[in-house]
Image (cartoon, rainbow, N blue to C red; front, side):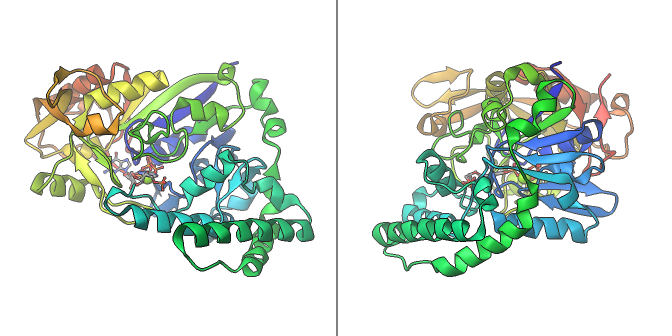
Length: 428
Ligand code: GDP
Ligand code: IMO
Ligand code: MG
């Protein structure tokens, strides 16, 4: 009965979840995204085509698979229409495969504007968000003020009135908080009506739609965005995103019960990256960081920002494994480490003034004062991206993977060694 799989990012996002979901989606009937919005950027290579999904579940690339944007998602209608069109132009009939939960909240232009102004006011203390209006949209949800996808199903007059009312409210906030000029409510309402005409046929009641999953009659994959260390409760607050990226979000963001979940798969990069601000003990500054960035092509798919790069953080990985109750792990981008003479893994921290500490802390102020304690491992020279079985991996690569596994405390089931679909090694 409990056959639903969950795929979760277990670092600071960009672990390669898109590639993992694309692979696993081949074996299910439904993929559901449960949180976040167009702040995500999942790049998937299929043959010589490259697809970048922001809002869209990655399952959309698979023929015969339905994709649902769950109630926990925040949905920017403009971006969704844009993404549908982009995918359609690339030969993916997104509109035929996609459904949208009525409970998903709508990201509006005033959310993006409010976020931009707040980030500007925070100056050095800014979060370094993706600028997609995610935080302010979730604020409106929690304040019970937001618009939802189900509102797009209203008749045009009712929807127009509602949008105008919300824009006028936001205009008051823009003026009071930031002395900013108002947004054009009528024009925004016109555009929302345009999006509604397009998206209405896709909107479903998630509880009804997910009945076959509850009844064990439909195979399903729940697709996480961002990563555990960006979780609003369990990440390095305030340097987090505004959603529940860890396992809890898979339940609250779908309305499915824990009873349907049969397997939780964690995705870790063989090293680490972080975009935006916040503490990052294993960050590499200078040439080493630059090299890793260049080799891993570590630039944000959503904002184009260079990702901060560093060594694998064992305490952080253990934390993510335990918060999520992982059953198994996929290690991605192992190929990027080929040719590095000595690889380092943080196995503990030295907390300023307090001595050695084995466990992670999600208190940003404390994590800021943690210095990594490293163990070193010999690297390998071979280009591993052409290898077709796990057994072919160089001895040192296997030793490094075993060290990661020991840190995470959960079995490594698969390894990816390149961006393509078949760059995937299953460990027997
Ligand atoms: P996501 O947000 O977790 O889906 O990850 P992103 O798509 O933002 O970042 C992962 C990037 O690494 C993408 O550009 C992928 O095409 C690429 N990628 C995924 N797996 C591998 C791998 O094993 N090796 C290499 N070199 N690139 C990979
Ligand atoms: P995927 O799904 C990496 C980061 C931002 C910022 C913080 C808050 O591709 O892994 P937000 O716009 O969400 O309010 O920004 O979270 N962030 C991500 N970092 N990958 C992502 O998504 C991210 N989505 C948000 O850089 O630090
Ligand atoms: Mg990404």
